Amino acid sequence: MGDEQLFENLPEQDKSQPGGRGSVRLRVPERSQIAMQVAALDDLIAEDHPVRSVWAFVEGLDLSHLYDLVKAREGHPGHPPAAPELMVALWLWATVEGVGSARQLDRLCRDHLVYRWLCGGVSMNYHTLSSFRIAHMAVLERLLAQGVAAMVQAGLVSADTLAQDGLRVRAGAGAGSFRRHERL
Image (cartoon, rainbow, N blue to C red):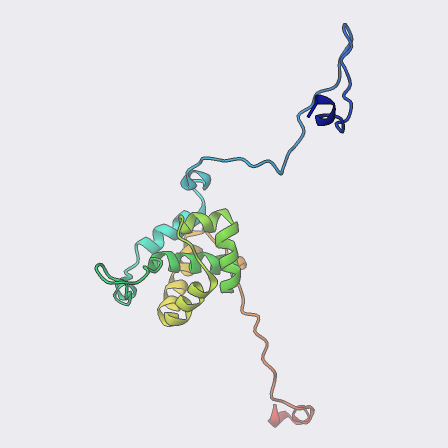
């Protein structure tokens, strides 16, 4: 195979002219370029970011009741679950951010830096998040209420940013029930 056949379909390039100004050279964005970035996850979140306060708050909680319910033990088969403090911290931060869906929280754990920082490399899925919330609803509700109240009191979160449940409930009243005062 000769050189003529190898390079015959390539476009002609401008040749720089001796003594002239030459062709323009620029650095253009190449967004499809694969690159490795080496950085510690902890360095990507500012030291004063409120999520660090959430983590510190959750670390100070007594979660021994949740630890007692973990079935995975040393010397026995079974996949270890995520740590209870991670699950509580994820749901607490999600509550502050107005996220109430396990599927949305799962997406954020993959795509959003703050949630990735909370996970610290522990993989999450919506089923695990949802199951934890359902299985420990009473404990989680109490801890979330305490956590959000503590964050509002500390000034880390304003009460305006908290989520409100948007559940619609169909009214059980007909048009006839509004005609008399005693039926209201």
